[in-house]
Image (cartoon, rainbow, N blue to C red; front, top):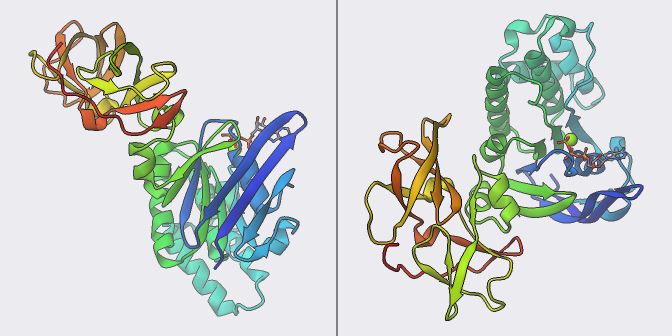
Length: 363
Ligand SMILES: Nc1ncnc2c1ncn2[C@@H]1O[C@H](COP(=O)(O)OP(=O)(O)OP(=O)(O)O)[C@@H](O)[C@H]1O
Ligand SMILES: [Mg+2]
């Protein structure tokens, strides 16, 4: 089974650059999610890996094999599209078996065994005899996934396979997907703009922004150590808070909402911002060491059952996720603590070395 290596991969459409000089590795047998906002180049990048789009520049290798100029068929990858093409008049089982018929190495019994396994994992056994035209979107999408995984290609590409599926079917699909993955090792590239899906499925996430690979890392690393303000903002719900400097004194910078001062990187405070995720901001009713006085300006309950507070501190807006029983509501006075170990520093949108924050007194 090969890994997939991209080297300077670029695709331009006229004056627009859809994918811009992307170099990365999809390790064999792992799941990589391509994540990013609409139009950032996810589909274009994946279509180049599939052989459905010709790169303007750069190379694609599967293991030692340079496949840049090979057709989709020669590359032998399976792909599931957002809007799958299927044979509406054939049954569920026939649709899954059809691509297997091309594989001359498989006996009829082996083909049937593969189909049965896929139907079982996808919880589609009861519908095996139904025609595609009679299924809802969720079931159709499961069949599309089944068709791709039944072939057991070394490389399988998914382009937002759960986008048009309601939430229950989506969860089922993700569960089935993980179960199948446990059974068969394949190198999988999975495009999504849904961060929760990416965090659940991926061994590594490739975060894209405007055609450029912003960061490629394990989900937890991407979340806890974003390389850029974009990564901090895009991941998380809501994303990271960014705080502007209030002023500099003797090489130490003070930020809105942070009690301590931060060692200024060389170059002063220009372009400097501190970042902290809402779940790491602590909110108290009383003043205390390391806390900054502010006010709650808004509150709501999140889907996860936590309380999302909007606070005004030092003239800046700050979001905090706190347990719902903290007694805080819009209008309350509040004292905010941003723990030093959770504060990150960014300069012109890129993270700089972990800052050292003085734990100065309360403000
Ligand atoms: N065939 C094409 N001709 C011209 N421009 C294109 C073509 N395909 C894609 N683009 C442009 O390239 C950019 C990247 O598109 P792409 O479809 O790869 O993004 P995406 O990340 O998959 O977006 P989405 O989340 O909406 O599916 C967009 O600006 C898009 O308009
Ligand atoms: Mg797309």
